[in-house]
Every structure is written in C-alpha cells, then in structure tokens.
Image (cartoon, rainbow, N blue to C red; front, side, top):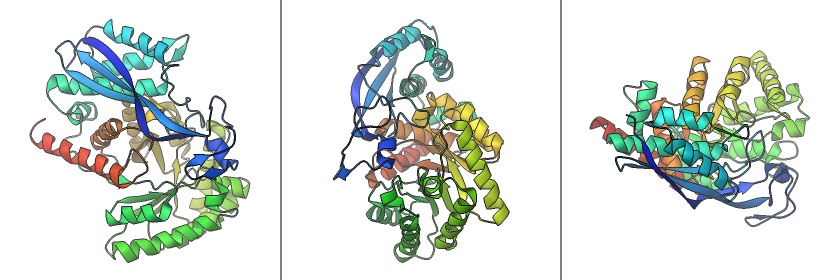
Length: 411
C-alpha cells in the first residue's frame, strides 16, 4: 500500500568487513596480519584496506511506521565497473537531494519509491549505488511496517510466489580457508566455501595451490560431514586462472578439467575464472571458455561477478550464454527492484538464481536479502555479513526461518 514519506534521516554506521583494493592485492600488496601495506592502485581509493563504512537510512511514513535500510559498498568497490566505497561526507549532497525527492513525491510504496530513486539524477548521474540500495531497503521496510506484514510478503506481491521456502545457503571463508571450511561443514552448509583466491600466493603461480585445496576440501567434506553430506562446491578465483594462463582458453579449460577431477563427483562452480578489461571483453572470454568446456565435456559451471553490476549487464551475460550462474550482487545493482529484475532475467535465460552480496554489508541488509532470495525462489543465497562464517550463516538462515513463520500466520 502507498504511504506519504514524512521524514528521511540517516546516521553513519559500519559494514561488517573491509573495503579492499583488489588491483593492489592482485599486484602483490604485502600483508601483515590483517593489514595490507603499499599504496592503493585503484583510482579514488586512499588505502589498500579500510574498515567498511555504511549509512543507516530511516524512512518514516505519515502513519508513523518506520523503515530502515543500510547503504554500503562491497568489499572490492571501485573495480569491475563499481562505484567507489561509501564516504558519508561525500554523499551528504546526494542524500539531501534524495530526501527532498521522497518528501515531495506524494504517496509511494516500495516499487514506486524505488523507481523514483532509481530514475533520480544529479548533474546527469544516478545516485551512488549504495544509496539506491539502502533507500530501497528502507522503502520496503516502511511499506511492510505500514501494512503490518513482513518484507517477504511485500516482495511476494512483486514476484507472485505462493509458497516460499528456505533457500540453500552459500558461505564464504575469507583467507582462513581450512578452519572456516570446517565451520561450514559442521553446519551442513549447502554451498561452500568461496575461498577468496585473489592472489598468486593463494592460487599458486600455476594454480597448484588451488588444486591442492580442492582435494583437501573434498576429503574434509567426507571426513567431517559424512557420506550423506554432498554440498555444492563454489570457489571464487577473481580472474586468477586467466592471469596465470595468459587468458588462454584451451589452457584454462584443461585446468578446469583437473578441478573437476579433484572435486571427485561433487558439483563444482568457479566464479570469475577470467576477467577482461570491461564488460564486453569479460563476456567474450567467459563465453569462449564455456563453449570450450562444453566441447570437451567438462562439467564445471562458470559464474559471473565482476563487470556484471546491473540488470542490463545481467541481460547481456545471459544472452551471450557466457556463464551458468550470475552473482546478483545486491549492493552493486542499486535498488532491490533491480535485483528482482535480474533474477527474472536469469530464470528466463535458463540460469540459476544466486542472490549474493558482500561480507562488507550489514546485518539488516543481509536479513532483507534473505527474504528477497525467498521471494524469487533462488537457488542459493550468500551467508553475510562479515567473514566470521558462523554469524553470517545464522543471520541469513534465521531471517528466512522467521519470515516463514510469519508467512504461515498470514503476515
């Protein structure tokens, strides 16, 4: 139902992890404990690593109902076509403009308010993706509160889902790949472990360290998880395979054949095996690799992330047949309505639906993402925020469980 926006307020907050300069890390930025040394490489970044910042946005309806939404950037903001990390001081002007837009808009709801936010321009530019993400969350929460229902119920009105279910969870390990894999296995996570293979140190100069890890992971799944536990393997290599092979498609395909063998019967997906310099070249590389895998009978699935930052990008990857799965990386798409559109495009194109995001998000954005994943009947949803593993799994799974209880009670 529509409501009039009576107030829009904000306060500075924190993301649950860090904003990192991926280009500097891939170039060998030295690491000392949790800190990266050296100078940033990505234009606009002031450090290789800094704590993620957030803007906590509050939308109040004229009825007194309140909705909150959190605006933040992904861990590797500033690369792959993404906006720079959130800088609260730099975004004050955009926030003020968005506030005036909503206060003067008349009756709005989640959909119509998000459309206004998405269409708003300042000097010809859209609002920062983080602001669009946070404002659409707040509008969703405000409409739900105004109607006395859950955000899932509002989102179901958009997607038409009649019987939402718990969505399989995909957990991310961070650098502590082995200990955190144990955490995932003990909790019977359906998809694991991400792995964060973003440097030659982690991946190996020839990929050998990566293959060794896959072998270890499969053995660990069986030793700790038992014979009935068969998770899907999903590993993110941030273009490292392309980097160590010189983007040579036959060499990349041969390497992925080794990965499939190491997976020993478990389904395996590789995210961002290779990256171009822009969307076009990335699509071209991935499409060529996927075609070669099909030709060679290699059943490793390819996943897109970088340079796939909006519903138009998603449509292009789908139409090109470049990948099997696309990470719908929530903060990179802006408004939640764009994530709904991207999910529909993936489904229509025969791809799975992966509702993703970032460790640098907040507890609130994670809970709302989980409900959106249920509304689109996703194939997997990222456990977030943070890199503690246990906390992100609990936040996302519990958000879905609560939403299902309320759904059964008509809310």
